[in-house]
Length: 278
Image 1 (cartoon, rainbow, N blue to C red):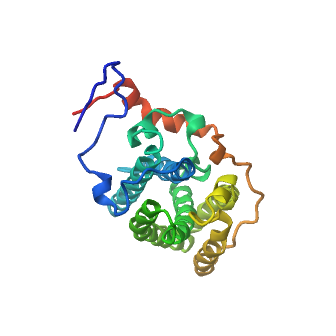
Image 2 (tube, rainbow, N blue to C red):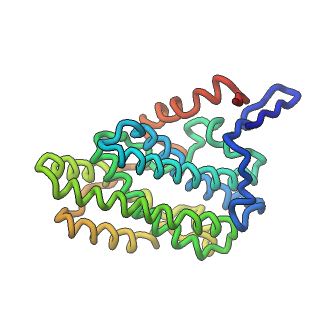
Image 3 (cartoon, helix red, strand yellow):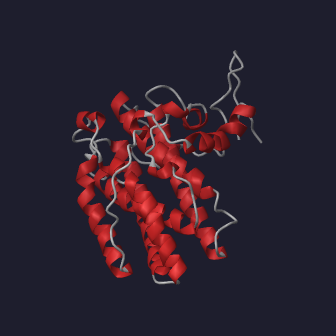
């Protein structure tokens, strides 16, 4: 644990949970991100951070002990991804991952709307995790070819973990679809609620145009995502929802009403006790 006080008493961002050095953990780190790469790393880091925060709610509430442990592991994996990505994003501005996680206001977050949707019931949580993991697998596989060494290194570690997340969620999709009439109804309803937020994941942005060759265009990931979804849906005898897309502008800092509650819960301790350590 560490705490450093500057001469102005502004100590936020110095809370650490351990003494791990990301530059030691990830090959390729230690570089300073350009402004555009930092913005992109923040997109992905915010996605992972908010979903990690959401899934942490299930710890001690999952339907069975084994699932409690599994969701805990998924939560920690995503938190690790968020830490690495936000650390890299912060190199462009001199901010730490703690600064970026705890000391930004809602309009400064760049996560997609899918991850900030309510946990709902267990089927809602699994439908959201399945969709997001299917997207993340394609994303990290593509980033393995990035010309940015740090993004490539982070993707190299994350790709194995998100593949596990996808397999785990897929097993629950099959289990719920083939379970009781109620579990199947709830799963279908959960996918109907989540599906309008899919389009945002695959919408090209001016930032990804500027980073052509460094990061994949979101639209290029869609075919692999649709194949993964179709394979599991066919086995589960589910139909892909045909629903209009929601108007999501998370990459521009505009969020749903749920986002404020998530940040209040996630940030209150750091803001109430700046620089706290134990």
